[in-house]
Length: 434
Image (cartoon, rainbow, N blue to C red; front, side):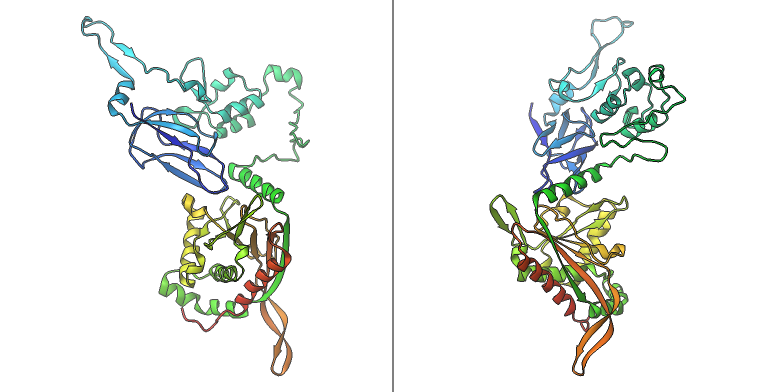
């Protein structure tokens, strides 16, 4: 029997594991080559994984909510159709049996890897529980008999995390629990950080993406000694041009023109001037990236962030950048990004001005060595030099901030790069056509 191993794919250079969100196929199901077989999630993106070959799902080695290392086998597909059919459940009748004799049912043999799948079968043999549900039940002292009575909203009545949390919220104390804490007294639950739940506090569990983002941010601060530099830029020409052409631009090209593609254009030019900003670190080695791939931090409706990447940004004109920015931002908000959309970034841009913030000190997106924040654009009085002397005028001003890894980027390089970005924005050609 020919077997094909489905392994957890590598989703990016800094991604070492992924969480299984959903199996679209179960053991015994037929699958076509490149047909979606499961969905996985990383701290970068949720994505669908296609089958590497056509055949029958022979084994599923890891269940929903399990975190699996990259390169580990998660399922086995049999490409032998005849063998697959022979191994599937069948009903056979004994030829010599009388017509009133009950047909003999043959059940599929237990696979050798079945014991490695972390599921729990109840006494009736028909219900399974994921490792996440088991852990919740263990922490909350939910006995197996009690677990069996919980209604499940998952496939085939499977109990999900949501079902468990809803059940626990409305759970009535058992006689055993009442002997410890009287019904008239609600004993607060104390968490590991010493915070107790009560009438004046609410404990909110992080969702999967927030937990991954938290780990990523902590790892970045532990890895890179962060330094942040600031400059203020006069972007009056840029603002006036955008206000004047945004209507004609959309009418002609079918794309909205925001400030983001203009920022990306200036960053790409500055990276070409200062290529040692476009590096990563591997031990005592500095890895210089020849491609300029700029990630743009994008807020999701959930409040989390994701960083889709504009590949080869230095090769795109303003229209091409606007198309890329609008496409990636739209698909990010609709959870339609592909794994390649969030891979291979070499520098990241975040626009804190979107939230009305004038400046920020962003955390480096590992394994990159720098990230720039664009603050809110505000009208301010500024001193201008003219042929008649200095004058005070109302100008469109903004702060730019750059956080960089001081292991490989010193103040001269970081400060010069940031100043160069500001110079490009200030020198924006407000007479260019759309």
